[in-house]
Length: 563
Ligand SMILES: [Zn+2]
Image (cartoon, rainbow, N blue to C red):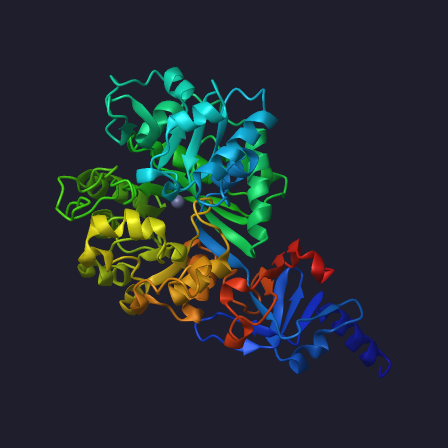
C-alpha cells in the first residue's frame, strides 16, 4: 500500500508534466486585467498554466524542455484582422517593388532586371510602387516602354488602387484616347487624351483581365510564402481580407494537407457588379472551407476607394490644390440604399460577418448605417462587423462604433506624417477634416473595440512597427524628424498591443481559444528579443521576433535562438 503511493505520485507528475516550460520572463497575459507573470507551461499544444517560476516548477518533468526567457516578452501570438496573403504571396513570386525606396529610378532598375531574368514570361506583372515616387502620383507608360521594350507590363500600386502599365499592355487591352472611363475608375490621360500609363481603381481591370491567372498550385506557393513571412513577424492568426473563387481551392488544399499553420479566416469578396445570388457561393465556400485552421464566414464589402486618387467617399467634396471645393466627393462602389436595404441584412441573416473597407467619412457612415439596418431587421446577434481603414471619421459617428459593437480595424502605420499624407491628402481635405483622420484614441474613448490589421502587402505586417506608430504617431523611419501626427490620438502601449492580440482575436472569432494567455487556450505564442513594456529597452519597433509557436510548435525561430 505504502509503496504504491510514490509510484502513483510519480505517474501523476509525469502525466501533468509540461512539454515546454518558459521561465524567468515577462509573460504578459493581455487579458482584460493584464498581468505580467514570469512563467508559462505548454502541454499538448495548449497553455497548461501561467504563474510564477516557483508555482510552475512542479510542472517540470524529466522530459520537459525548460526555456529561460531571460526577462524577454512572451506574448499571445499576434493576430492580423485585415491582411492580403494572396496579394503578398503573389508579390513575393512576381516583380516585387515592395521594400524599395519610393524612387522612380529604383523601380526601373528592378523592372529591367526582372525582365532580363524572365525573358520568356508573356507578361511582366508585379506591384508595390508608391505614388510619391512620381509627379502627381501617376507613373508613365513611357518609362516601362524604355525599361522593357515591347513587353506587356502590369504593376499594381502598393495600395492596390491603381496600376502602372506599358504601351503594349494598353494596346492589347484596346485602350486609346477614344476609350471612355469606366464607371468605377479613371484612365489617367496625356494632354491629347491618350492613356498616360496609370489606371485608377476599376480602370485597372481593363488590363488586369488579360493577365494569365495563377494556377491553384501557384496560389498554394504564394500562400505558403506569405504564411512563412507572416509567421516571421510573430503572426499566428489572420483574416484574409480579399478572397475569390480563384484562391479558395489553394486554401482548401493546404488546410486539407495540414500545411496551413496560420489560423485563417477568409473574407469572401463581394463582387459589386453582382447581387444576392452570390450568397450561394458564399455558403458553399463556408461549408467547404471549414478544415483544420481554415474558416470562411466573412464577407468583404469594399465601399469606396482611397483619398490620394480622390475616390475615397467623402460627405463634403474634395478641395482643389488652391483649397477651393471641387465637384468631386469620391466614389461609393456599393449604392448605400442597396447596401442598407438589401445586402447587409441578407448577409447578416445568413450568419456572415460583415467586413467593410471604408476610407472616407461618407463610406464610414454607410458601413455604420448598414450594420444598424441589419440589426434592426435581424436583432443584435453575434456577427462582429468590423470596418477597416476608417481614415476620416465624422465626429458624429465616433460613438456609433461602440453602440453598434462594430470593430475598428486600424492600420496604425498610416497614421503618421509622410509624403503621401502631406502632399496627396491633407491639402485636398482641408484642416478640419485632416484632423479627423485615424482617430484611434477618440474611438477607444467612445467605447469602440480596436482591432489590429496591417493591410499587407500594402504596408508591412511588422506588428511592432505598427504598435510603435499607434503609440507615437510617428513612423519608425521618421523618428526625431517628423512631429507626431494628431498627438491626441496616441494609444497606450497595452491598447495598441491589445488590438493585435485580443482585439484581432475577437474579429477573427478566435478569442475563446487565443488572443490572451490563459490556461486551456491554444499555445499560440510569440517571443520577442526584449521586454517591450520596459521603456528603457529602446523603441518598440526595434524589437524583433525570436520565436513564433502555433499550438506549441515552432513555425518561426530566429537562427540566433538555437531552437
Ligand atoms: Zn485591404
